Length: 223
Image (cartoon, helix red, strand yellow):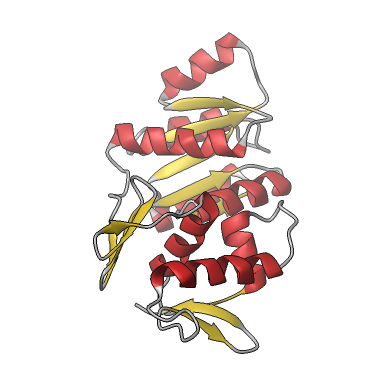
């Protein structure tokens, strides 16, 4: 799923983009309506996050132009809180209206909700690797048909590695993608969680065959 983020504040673009990428979306960013229109025509996004107060051309004007030939879902992001602005944005064809400052988790939930309503939400696929089954819908994993007792972070790490099987990730990259860039924990945390996962899914944890250590780099999952 492709999301176009339009905002003239670079720090907002960066934080929103980081959150949505962690959620599994492909993201494209623009600082102005003109740049956004170029990207819109080029990448054909599945959803647009649109700031109202843009330089030269407002988000409302951009929405009006888009709605002439596209039903793409649009969520307005704005510091303008009046009821008149909210009503105007929705009447122009906006699908939701999020007031700044906002919670990144709430924004991600609204993106999922709008995607769902529009029929653009990507199907959630169960990951099956041999006798290992991971279900993102329930955040559960099974080995040989038996439920594995995993903490939320163990599940998140296993799911991320399995979805990206074959790719090598440094400890720092795993901390960023699983724990979050704003959480300050030691890279040793990754090693501990990998050890716990190996104890649960490997036949011989001392000789792992699924979660491999790549010396001097990090870890990778073998599918």
